[in-house]
Length: 402
Image (tube, rainbow, N blue to C red; front, side, top):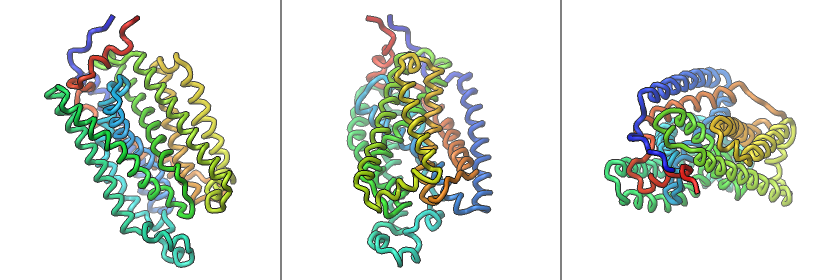
């Protein structure tokens, strides 16, 4: 039997009040984190830039990952995407703000990237050969190009989605599908170049052809975890309480499981290929991350980023239970930050494991700002796309028995 859909998908006063409280709390923690980061910038500027890059790159990944999953949803359809579509759209609309939050990294180029150090370049043939690509003016120009492309895609998809709500029909759904077909390819290429510029060039002698795809998968996993946590929160009250079924949560849990497995597969593939090749310029990257205390972080990632989530998400009951799937999702968000920390920090601390207080403050600061911005954007639209052609199919998902 199919249940009656709610008369409106607009946020109720109670839900608006709850979101306002969460937004204020996020802004408060974000402000504390920012103040701590300012203090860190004064006291330890080099460490501030490293820690800020960790915090920024993770939360930026959810913002951009939301745009990517939004395009995947427009291409593939499916009830899983319909129930989180407004979450993905609101998260993607933080991209202009994330572009602004990138500015401290521009000031940190001399502290972060050795290819910007003329003295080091003068004595390093590899850096000299890469100067055509790895130089500050061209690097900054590429940052501008990336954000222009991503914000254009975000703007068009969000605008058409709003028009679809007002007018209905299939016109805008077809337009969003066509743009998404090209957009998802553009996203993969631009993100591959971006992660090469921002993260891989921290160790300019090292390279990996899988790194871009691994980043895309990581962003997808982070975004699914974030979306599930928000969806369960929204589903605790009307109108989403009447929309979200256990089947929706089950589908999202299966997708999280798939991305956990894909992350593990690609991470192991990269390690295996580089380890088997045993080339000095490649293996040094892993030697820094598997020794001197960093190996414990690597072991923790194997256990808590793959094995534990994998085993938990195999359970149908865990995926269908709002409380347990939320706990898994929040844990994935935390361990994803640890993974980003492990990717970035050993470039600067090769001889011993080092956890600075800024490594905690920066993710909290950037995260607080991101969540506050997201919760500012979320109430601007109804929680379900009322004009979407497949809406009724999504609403019926998991409500009928055979």
